[in-house]
Image (cartoon, rainbow, N blue to C red):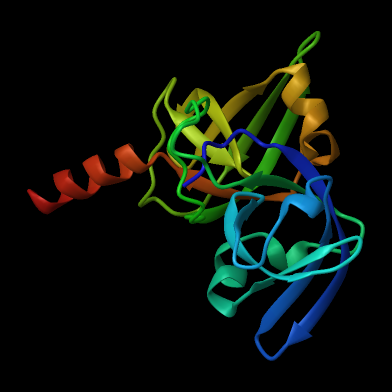
Length: 195
């Protein structure tokens, strides 16, 4: 479980293809606090640390993860948002995030608004819904939805989030990982079951 409050960004140092999997070497400020088998959300997708080295760690994304995330587009040098799993005695500053990406969205617009940014994101899967002022996770960041439409929404980004995540590097048409609110997904599933 995660909160969607990004701790830091990491830099992709290397990408190795192994069959249908990709192994990512990631440089991160908390490297020396990590251990093998630890779960870390990378752009919102939970991956397990499988190697520790002097200046990086490695994680492996299997075919299922690669199909559901923006990891196919990652390149050496790219930044990823990182969050270690939540501790049970910590505050839940964001919202309940599972680290299971639902679908990939596409950045449609980025509008600077005198000190903040509004980012509009579209997605193709009508099975997912957003709610005005509800929660969503974009590349692992817990955000509040400003505008909600079928297969699209926008979020407002404060300066701290913009500068302390990889949001400052986003461009129009970039792919982003989306995890919809877990409570909303359960409510939707229950309602569909009664129809």
